[in-house]
Each structure stands twice: as structure tokens, then as C-alpha cells.
Image (cartoon, rainbow, N blue to C red; front, top):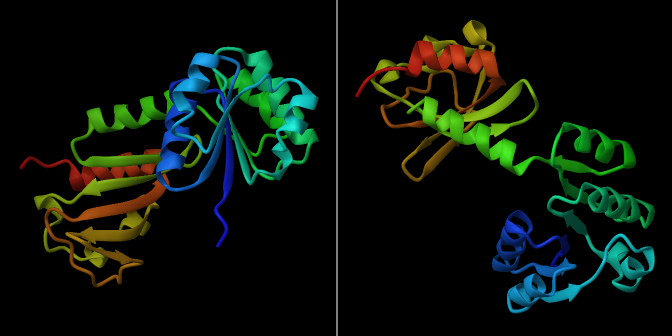
Length: 223
């Protein structure tokens, strides 16, 4: 299988972490920034690292950007450069474009001009940290939309040795238990007769308000 080719445009904290993570996974990565110092920093990490202005159409063509499987636009505070770069990538037919947004207005523009995925790293991480701070039961949190999420909850004594039939979370809360992790084992789509044990990690999908209600009723207990 051929390695996927990624290009990361903007080597700040967010772009740099993506570049490093992809490289560690053995992917081919082209690191791009207008700042020579940042490019030099990633010269030994990425497959290739270049100083380039990605708002210039000819520059992108010379880099062969349309041949990359996925391009991540992680440009920092320069919203204009982010938008122009994204527009150029769309026009050149890049298959997958992920762009970091600074705010909701920036996201709306990016979506309108054809970005395939828009992320808010600071906001998303803030939401995740807030959930972890507020509840000792939440191990991880993935926002699917403004209203729906996937959450990992730790089973406490209140659900110990109770089956999924007993809990009946779908009928009572409108949530679905996707999987149960116990030690090194994971049970995907567990049977209704599955008995929970204290310390199990329960992966739940549902509306945020319903997950919170379920968590307060079933998981908010003391050790």
C-alpha cells in the first residue's frame, strides 16, 4: 500500500503538531510556511519542508499540491491568507482540505468556498477540557456537532453488576451505548444482557443534554 501524502500549510503550534504526528506515523509530509525559521525547524521532521507563499497560484502548482491526498491549512492569525490559500486549493482540485478556523465567521467563509472540513482546535480542546474538569466520570469527549457527542464514561458503583436492560439508556435518555471497554478488551455493540462492572469504560453517543442527564442519574456517584 502506498503511503498517503499530506501537505501542512502553516507551522505554528497546531500545524507543527499535526506535521510531527503524521511524520511519526510514517506518512509523507510536505511542511510549508512563509517563515524560514519554522521551515528549518521541521526540515528534519517532515519528508520535505519549503518556504512558500501559498496564496500564489503558481507557487502551489509548482509544489504539485493537487497530487497530495490531504492538505491541512493551519495558517495562524492571517485569516485572509487562510481563505485565499483554501480557495486556491479548491480551484486546483485537492481531494481533501482541512482548515483551521479562527472564529465562526471564518468557518462560514471556509465552508462556502469549499473546504471539506473546518476545525476549531482551541475551542474544541476547550470543550473537551471543560467536560473533563466538570465531571470526574468523563475520560474523553468528541463533539460530533453543536448538539451531539461521543463520550467515554467510567462506570462507578451505582451501575456495578447492572445489565444494559436494567439501565435501559436508549428508552430513558435517548442515548446509545456503542461499546464497553474492560481492561484490554473492547465489546462493540454489547448485548442487552451484558453486565457492567465498576471501572468499565462505557462509550456513549447521543445528544449532549441527554448524555448529561444520563451521567447525572447513573454515573455521578462517589468512590
